[in-house]
Amino acid sequence: MSADNGFIPRLKTAVLGTADRPLVFVGNFEVEEQWAVDEQGLPRVSAPGGMAVVNSMDEFTLLLGGKRDHVVLKHAPDPGYRGYLEGLGLDLPQIHVIADPDPARTVSQDALHDPWLIAALSALRTDEACLLAHGVSAVEEELSTATGLPLAAPDAARCKAVNSKIYSRRIATKLGLRQPNGWACDTLDLLDEAVTEAAAVLATGRKVVVKEAFGVSGKGISVVSDERRLDRLRRMISATARRKGRDRIAFVVEEWVDKRADLNYQFTVSRDGSVHFDFVKELITENGVHKGHRIPPRLDEAQLETIRSAAQALGGQLAADGYYGVVGVDAIVEPDGGIFPVLEINARNNMSTYQVPIQERFVTAGETAMARHYSLRLGTSVGFDRFREVLGDLLFDGAGSGLLVNNFATVNAGAQTADGAPFAGRLYGVLIGDSVAEVDRIDARVERALAVLQQD
Image 1 (cartoon, rainbow, N blue to C red):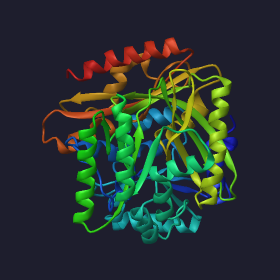
Image 2: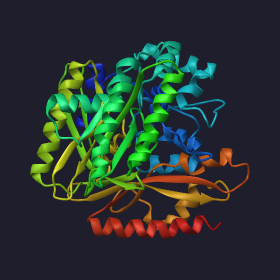
Image 3: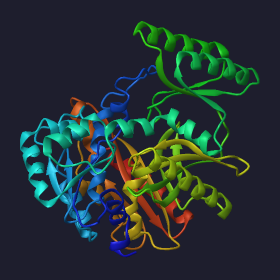
C-alpha cells in the first residue's frame, strides 16, 4: 500500500481536513480513568506497579507518526530498540521526552509538569501542529491550552459522552442493532428496574454482568450468578449515591451471552460526517483481559457485511452527535455464528489502532498476523539487545516471518516501583507468518525463548 493512501494520512485528513499538517501523538492509555473521576464505581483491586506498565504503553505512538510528526514519551526509547525500528526502515517521528516522569501519572499529566516540554511543544504552533491523544479528557484539554496546540478531536465532554457504555446501548437500540439483552441505568430508579428484570434472568440459571459505564481492561465489571449478589450490588450502589446526595449513576446491566469469539472493529469518522471502515480483528483474551488480536479474523462474508453495516450506522450517528476521529467497537460471535455487532463503543484509539502501520508495511496479502503481549517476571531491568540475543532468528527483520516488537518500554516499567524486588513486565509485538499454524509455532517458540530471560 502506498504511504499516501495509508491509515495515518487518511486519519489526518479526517480530523484536520488535510494530510499535510503534523500531529503530536500523546499515548494517554486508559483515559477512561479520567472520564470516570466523578463517576461512582464498583470495588476494584489494583496490582502494585500495574499503572507504571499501563502508562508506559505510550511508546506505542512511536510507530504512528512519520518524520514530520512528533510523539511525547515518558522515557526515551531503549537505544537498541530504537536502532531495531530504524533498521526496519521506519521513519520515526521526532521524540519529546518528559524530564521527570512519575510512574503513576499518564504521559499527559507528566507533560503538564514539565515547563521545558511545554515550551518545546508550544514552538510547534508555527508548523500548525495539532495534538492527537489516545483519548481526550480534561487533562488533554489542559495540555492543549498550555501549549497552544489545538486538539485533533472534539472536546473532552463530547468524547466522554460517546464513550459511555450507556451511550453504546442506547444508540444501538435506536439504530436497531443487535445487542445482548440489558438495561442502561443512569438513575437509581432505572437501576432498581434493571435489577428486578435481571433477577428473572438469574432465576433461569443464566448469568448477568454489571458494568461501570467507563470501565476498561476488565476493571469495573462484575459477573453475577445469583440474586443475592445482584441485590447486594444494587444496595451498595444506591447507598453510595444517596450518601453523596445524588440520584445520577452510570452503570449497565446485561445478560451474559455465550460466545465463540470476541471481535474488535475500527472505523474513522471525518469532520464532514463520512465514515471509513478500517478493519475487523479477532480478539485474544485471557480471564476477560485483552491479550492481543488475530489477523485476519475467522469470519465469512455475511458476518463481515454485518460488521461493516453496523460500522456505517454507528459512524453516522456518532457524526450526528458531534464526534469525529477513530472509533473502535467490541462485538461478539455467538456459538452458532450469529453476530452481536455492538457490545460497547470506544470512541478513541484502540490497541489495534497502533498495529495498522505495521500491517500496512509488513503483512502482505495472504499472510497471517497475531498481535499479542507476553507477560514477564523479571529480577532486574533488561535491555533490548539482550532480547535480540535471546530471540535470535525469531525477531522479525523486515521480511519473512517472526516477532516484530512494537512496544519495549513496558518490559521494564514495573522496575520503577518494585524497590529491587522481582517485577511484572510486558513485551508487546506482532507475530507475522504465512499461515495460522506458522504464527502459532513462532508464538510457542517465543514463549520458550522468553522463559530464559526470566531465569537470569
